[in-house]
Length: 112
Length: 119
Image (cartoon, rainbow over all chains, first blue to last red; front, side, top):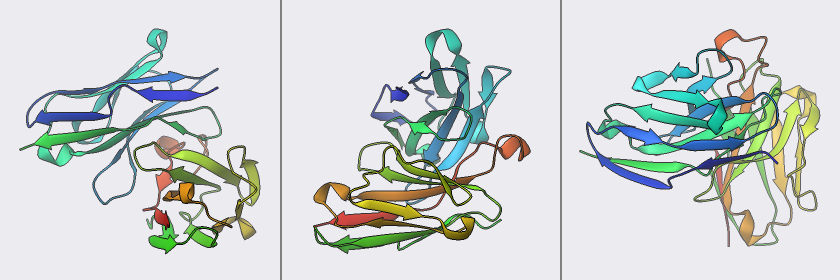
């Protein structure tokens, strides 16, 4: 069965700290990987995605993610967070056809 | 471009009552999804439409949930009768096929969701 797991439910850190959120997936065949973000009071929006090619993917707002096929992982990183990065982050995986399976989410609180 | 529109934003009902949610996807998006997001969990797919046909409804509780997408545009999700465990945010999303939309192909665009509370 397809599944996505996120390692941390809650992360609290200070501004300028580095952020890394773990994501592991279980999927048969070719998989497309995504990170979505939901800021307080807003809808889910795409941070970045990986379909193929360079396993290091850069997204919006300084976020990047690395696809490591051997570890079935797609971890999200940001070198220096800001207070405005406070949000909930979801990892998602899907095969062709666009249907996505989401992880449980990680709530990130950045203290000013 | 206009985003995915959903209504109502909030709904409170008592158990055993019925409720309906409406979604208008981004113009031209052939694929439409309904997800259920229970508090503290990630979104779970309920049903996927391609135009007006159902692609996947394997996780839709068909004894109480129904969905339709007449004319391949707007969609309605109905719950009848509602249970306490149906309290959640119901998210609608739309997308274009990977091969047709360049860099944005495969991306799901989400609406703001409809928050349901069942008492």
